[in-house]
Image (cartoon, rainbow, N blue to C red; front, side):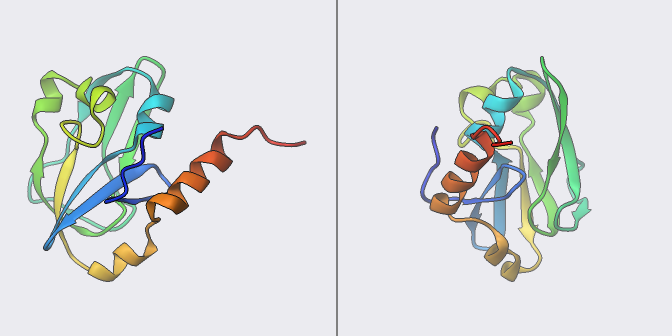
Length: 133
């Protein structure tokens, strides 16, 4: 599984990259693999204010519909409109062309609550291990 070292991660399997006060958010390789082939993406309106852990849209796959959550608070500055015509970019390139939204970060201290790549790797290993009854 691909876990880029330069990103931060949430327990809901979103990744986040920061450039100054703008953060880019998408879903991780683990999440897209669990979802299966993404066939439809619902995106938020530009300018919408989101609190940490708010739902900002949904991803529909051949298996299910899954909500996408923002790990930090901010206002939507950009959405990846290419996903409307090619939602499969999320499966093909989740950390590149499959990004979903960009926010103007409201509170940089919220980044402290996210996982490092190593922490996320351990988290996904625990999630994918069968439960011992």
